[in-house]
Length: 231
Image (cartoon, rainbow, N blue to C red; front, side):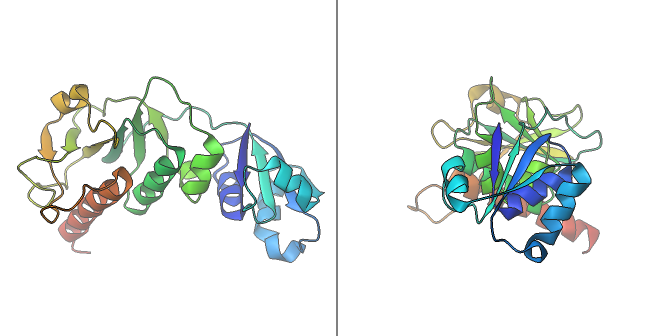
C-alpha cells in the first residue's frame, strides 16, 4: 500500500483517477467546508472517508506533516508512453524517492509528457515520491525503460560536453537524459545519445545536483519552444 500524506498529494491522486483507493483518513474535528474539494473528489471515486484521531494519523503516517489528511491506496499501475509525446525526460540511476519527486515536479512544470526510469526494478515508496512531487507523480506517466520512441532524438546532458544546452536546437522531439549523482549517465545511454550537451557553470563551482540540473535543462527546452512559437 502507498500512504499519500497531505491534502495536495491525496487530492491530486483522487482527481487523476489512476489509483485504487482503500480509504481516506481525515483528522477528527476538521470542518467539511475546509476540505470540500477533497471530500467531493473522494465521493466521485467512491472512496470511503473515515474520521480518526490525530494520534492514529501520526501512528500510520511516515511523519507528522500530514496536515490531517492521509489516503491509503494501491500503488500506481504501470504507465505507458503517450503516443504523441515530443518531450520526454530519461533519468538514469536516480535512487532517492524525494529527488525523483522533485524532478517530476519540475518536469510537469516545463512540459515533459512522460518520464523514463532506467531501472531493473521499481523499489521507491510511491507515497514519498508523490508527496515530494506535490502530486505530479499522480498525473505524469513514469515508465520503466530506457528507449525513447522511434524518431525521437536522445540528448544526453553531462559535464564536459563541448556544446551547451544553449548551443543545440532543442525544439524537435527529444528525450533529455540525465544521470544520477553517483555515476552519471551510464555508458549504455551515452552510446545511444544522438547529441551531448552540458550546462555551463562558473569555473570552480561544484557540480549541480541531478534535480537542479534537470530543472535547468528542461527550462531551456521549454524556453526554446516558446520562442519558436512566439509566445
